[in-house]
Image (cartoon, rainbow, N blue to C red; front, side, top):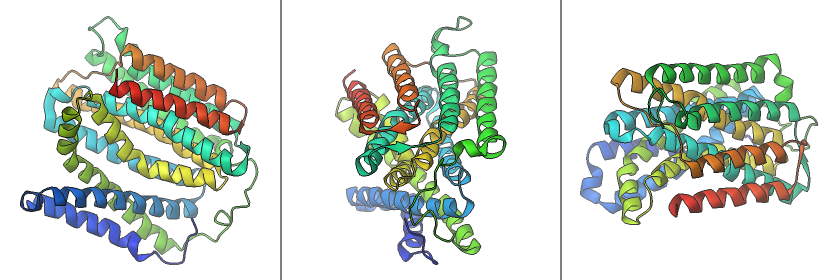
Amino acid sequence: MKIAKSLPLWSVAAPVVAWLLIAGQAMGAQAMVGQVYTLLLVAGLFAGVLAAVFHAEVVAHRVGEPYGTLVLALAVTAIEVALIVSLMIAGGESTAGLARDTVFAAVMIILNGMLGLCLLAGAKRHGEQTFTLSGVSAALTTLAAISILTMVLPNYTTTVPGPSYSASQLGFIALVSLVLYGTFVLVQTVRHRDYFLPEVATNDEDTHAPPPPLKMTWLSAALLLACLGSVVLMAKMLSPTLEATVLKLGAPKAVVGIIIAAVVLLPEGIAAFHAARANRLQTSLNLALGSALASIGLTIPAVAVVSLMTGWTLSLGIDVKSSVLLLLSLIVATLSLGTGRTTVMQGTVHLVIFAVYLFTAIVP
């Protein structure tokens, strides 16, 4: 995306309109207008997503790699955490598995859907693409550890029956998650920042374009938060309609978590896809894997605090089918990203696993 010297009108108008729709919903506009207002909320949601991607790229172009991708990952994850926590508080103990379903869905969407699409699109356009192996290896190592500890191990502990941790175990795992993610961010941004930079400079004209002015960057950062906030609030407003539709279709309740994760991750997915097509695969991988780590490393501690404060049991362990798919995804990602080079083959394999995940989620 080419960064202009001023923000286009649509990128400023999108969050404004989105927040006006949210205000209208709060004042009961949907009750008066009906399904038409629901369609307007859906349109506003996607407009907010596109605007968020634009503003994220403006900020990323100013601060450079890997800080730009980290900004978007942290912003989106913070909003995801707020959404999950608010739904948990509103729903009570009936939402004990919402965090698990959403986090697992986020990891599968990123590791297979987002990663597969980026690898396939980039390889189709540029043939073979390369990236810095050290950074990706560090991300996958951290992701494997934090995923298994939070979503598989709870099924096998014996202090309390699975798929839950006891209070002390939950607090310890929440702390471990923060330590793992915090260490990864330290490595990514300070200790070994070069691991997450492209080995070879690309010829993409946007990469070498002058950075946007500081004032424009700050405005984009504020609009980015406004866009992400509106996206999550509208997703929350649409969630009752979504749950009713899922139940009407006879699909498992876990599908709701998949859809919520997909909506929240859409800005990062679009940004990663654009980067891969522009032959900036390192940026694309930084976005994808960083998002997966942030999703677990920040969400699990947040919902653990809610669980410990309220006394609600938090279901974290995934079932056997999901465990097999998670382990398969981690193994395939390690193998496909283990050489520093990718082709359409790796992208196709990840997308096939993602299709299997979606199909077995609907038809378990």
